[in-house]
Image (cartoon, rainbow, N blue to C red; front, side, top):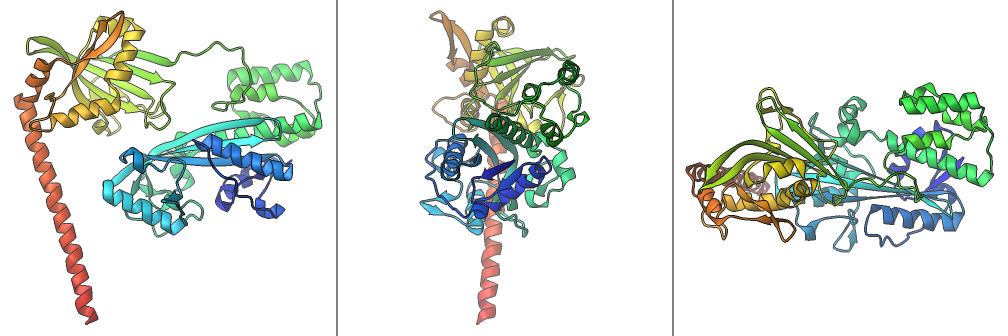
Length: 464
């Protein structure tokens, strides 16, 4: 079977062609067939641009085509600076690999010592009539301003991307390193998506469909339902040569693809809520939002309520909140009430006013709390105000609460509680430490600049 990879980036072809060859799928490049189209990528996201590429090359060649595109989002950048679909195109110019490394390294220097980044990928297989699409993301990494000397042609940003688990540049990662975080760095699911759908389209084109014995079908169904290792099956190429139609079997293992096909499955709720109580009495809530904006760096919000106290004559809850991708959610050591995995900095401490009974028994109330009150941008805005001496809204660590209003639930903010928190001795100490930290950072930056100036002056003196 042959398939055309609709890209001018040879690195993308190499990335998948070797594994697909083992499954009897030959990947053709645009160089192999002697054409080079440049379809206008006007899509709003990676999937739309991938479809544009796949369709353009299929229309030109009549060969089943794979289109692929990626979007880039950087957490610390303002909206107007986000690369999005224009990763290589900056200010109307198409950057080469070295220009990309220079541009994004300078962004890191401008906005921080390291920038948390997220790739969102889209892939589309098109056969002239139907398309199959697949999307995945890679978010557990960050950019630094000092590039590695090594290069991965076609993937220039690998030279400034760091994998946190081993503190290595992407260009230096070994297979063992990637296996430490398979969810983000292992792309077996992408290969499975291509294989499954190329076989499906090949069967539709050739009309090949042989009957499977009841015994064989029963064995395959039992294996699928038990979720045993797929390696127990013969290789895909062998099964195809035997003329066995087992697409229903492979359908059981598809994870994220959208086949544009109707299903009889019940509609899933837009969110999942998980409650747990620690041995020290802490209430923990994990709220997974299936409709989270894909630009966000999280789809799961965790709220941990440690205790209640009185402030300005009102009851408040002392909490910690964190935001993660559903596959990157951290656990707390329930026995000791501490954080594990060395990432306690991921939690923000806040004070709220909540109805704990409704929080645990009314999903609608819980949804408003987790999606609106604890929206990451909103919480960070309040906490930043808490670090100011005289903000427009004194709040300290207080972020408000949720109450019933007009037959629904709404956020509210108690000014007396905000005032009491903001001017408490605890917040005064926090602000003092914050100012000292900012001053220390400023002095380090001044020292670094002075060292650069001295070095440049020395070079100038040597040239005279």
